[in-house]
Length: 275
Image (tube, rainbow, N blue to C red):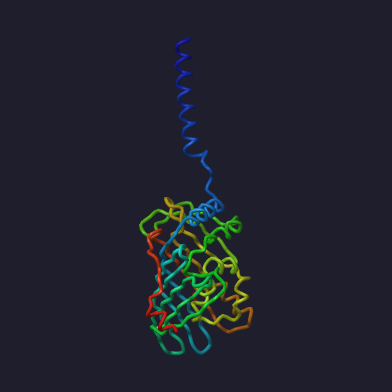
């Protein structure tokens, strides 16, 4: 009888040890929440020296007499030391029966402590210098996601993972203010780099906008950001008593090539052409 009880207790001890190990490996890990997910992205982004991403904008605005549509596909590269960015892509615009397709290119670098932006539309270059060094859409902002970590408590994490660029990703979705979105993407991107005239650009900061983050599971870095501003923009036009109907207003960014971008320099011929 004693031997039998010893055998039972031995098996029970092994079971308890197994359960304890499972707890350590699974249940006892820090629970994944929107806040911890955003913090992980923020911490990992702060150590990133460069990345590349692709931006796709699709906008359609319908008025009484005509429809305006803007589609853009842009490839961007960004480095943090030196702080610089390069964007190259195409814009297709349909307005009042006319169609226009143009090549866009932008270099953004620091010159004498100020931000210099070289912009080109169909190889017609111009230069703009600004004292402001934050809010650019093509250079790294170390606080890219840190500023949003306190505003994601109402976000949700999807039960399953998704595939982005052939890699497994978490998916997190919720709503952000226009102000947070401007800080994340930059105001230029929200108005399609000046191709869309909003009724009041300052009022955009007060909007509430749906956003979806896909995060690389292994790297804990952003893989994709999808923003659907259609409903929010409809409300903005209604607020200012405009007849414009916003059929679509979406932005998608795909991130890849972390730490692989070479130093970005403005070509001498671009500097000369910009004057």
